[in-house]
Amino acid sequence: MTYQRNPVKAPRLSGLALKAFVNTLESGIGSVLLDKLVRDSGIERWRELPAGDAPPLQYPLPHGAPAAELQSPQEQAARAVAASPTQPERETVAAYVRAYREGGADPVTVARRIHEAIERLDSGKQRLGLFVSRKPEEVLRAAEAAGERLRAGKPLSVLDGVPVVLKDEVDLAGFPTTLGTKFRTQVATEDSTVAARLKAAGAIILGKANMNEIGINPIGLNPHHGAARNPWNPGRITGGSSSASGAAVAAGLCPLSMGADGGGSIRIPAALCGIVGLKATWGRIPETGVPPLCWNVGHVGPMGLTVDDVAAMYALLAGPDGRDFAAQAQPPHHLSGYESAGLAGVRLGICWPYFEDADADVVARCKEAVKALTDAGATVVELPPPDLNTVLWTHSCIILSEMAEAMLPHVRERSSDFALDSRTNLAIGRHFRATDLVHALRHRHRLTRELVALMADVDVIITPTTATTAPAIPEATLPDGESNLPVVDALMRFVRLANLTGFPALSVPAGFDGEGLPVGVHLTGRPYEEHLLLRLGRVVERAAEHRTPSTHVSVLR
Image (cartoon, rainbow, N blue to C red):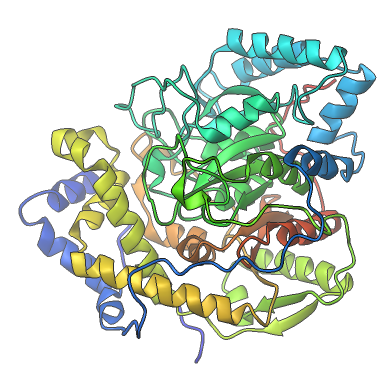
């Protein structure tokens, strides 16, 4: 079997042409156009592909070896932060802990500095488009409470007094969860599990971060709340859909943020913004309090400045909550072997033609990441090429069908409330047949089973996170944006399989391209082996070059 990626056959549309295209899709003759669109993109070959004996059920994910070092979530978080090196120029969670302990800063002063920085960065014509909603007075009250605990020597966790932002896809009591839309205005009355756990850890939640509308596009532009802009170059996209969750960390406003990932939506902005993003095993972090968009492929998870920061947040967020069914049947999460930089015995799975199907600078930086891992003792095992057409259509059918169903009541009531790119994708989701969805679920089961078997011989699979660094924002098309499927494919090429199968995946900064834009490398692990991904991510991170974005603030000094 040879590696093959079908070229994307779709026009690039914006402005009146895009509006006319969307109106046609939603009209009586739209089904004819949709038939041609999906047929030209390769769906018929997928429809004819046998799924063998696979039923349309999720394959039970194996639990793997038991934890070698069991610790409480608070102990794991403290362990991750204790492993973090002193880097004066990087305001990591460890830097916050040291500054608070040594008296170099206090949560109230930090909160005021952040508020001033947000006012500067997120207002006017050059705003970064970071926040959908904030309550600075509540932030100050939380900072005051954290300060009192720290002065008394009774912090709730290593995150006590540490600023965090939440993607506006998770409920935070007292705030609407807009999902990036203009019509979801009902205020949440209860915290999501992840928000509640962050509050219980003492984290200071700065507000709700901008996102791509309903998380349906990986580019990250939003016509209602403004385009999220990349701190490395405000003329470039952040990626999405957790767009501002990535940008806020990169800009220095916080060392941690909360993202959500149904098709790379944590890992893509992490890569384009030069930070770390973890999509844990499906169900590892409860989705209670996350409005349903894509049940079978959706995950919430941490984004952060460093691997240690993400490991600390993961430790405090993971584990069942008694309410999310998908989160129930899982082994205890842990960080066994986390600090070990020696990788003897670790096997890295790579399909080189797939790995190299990206821009030259991206491939070069990701090969340097592989070298860092092999220099530490890991070995490379060559893998067969993936069937990208099957992965693409299986994932697309599931996520778009589910999003179309989730949004159907409002589409019927007032479809014009959605952005044009969202309307395009929702129309495709509604166009899939019931037999397509069952076919997709069967292939999901088959692909998951095959990946379990493949990873008996390797410990992680390595690719770039995205095939390109951050593309330019199409300024002339704002606020509506454009339909640009080749860019979507370049951003999603390497990330779909982890969503489809539920396997954990981590994006780690691997350096920069010739224009100074960040490159991310992507590690996919076996179910419930986040600890190994994070351990390898630390090795990559320490070997890679670090820089500071052109738009950046320091709030600890």
